Amino acid sequence: MEPMTDRADPYRSVARELLCVLATEGRPMSLRELEQPGRLRDADAAFQLSVARVAGFVRSVPAVEAAPEPCYQPTTLGWMIARRSRAWAAAQQLRGVAA
Figure 1 (cartoon, one colour):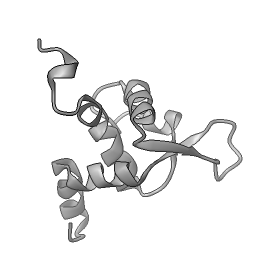
Figure 2 (cartoon, rainbow, N blue to C red; figure 1 turned 120 degrees about the vertical axis):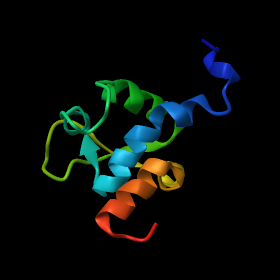
Figure 3 (cartoon, helix red, strand yellow; figure 1 turned 135 degrees about the vertical axis):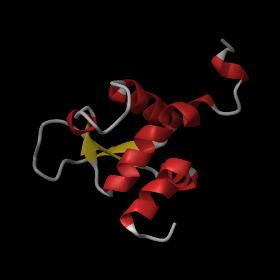
């Protein structure tokens, strides 16, 4: 297994799936929502979220429904990563939107 530092961008590769979920949903989501079955392939939403926060790909925003937990949405950089990923393009094709 190669060390994480030898890859081109370890943060982007770890957080890409999370960013695609947030971008596809189009609204801020809480960790509880991200952990629901079927959102992410692996049960590592908390790990991906922590990596994305450290890298500056997501930011917390006030919850719309006065929920006690923070919600997260992609930053400008996070949106760019999500749009360039293959998963984002595939999701947009399924929804009938031009990528």
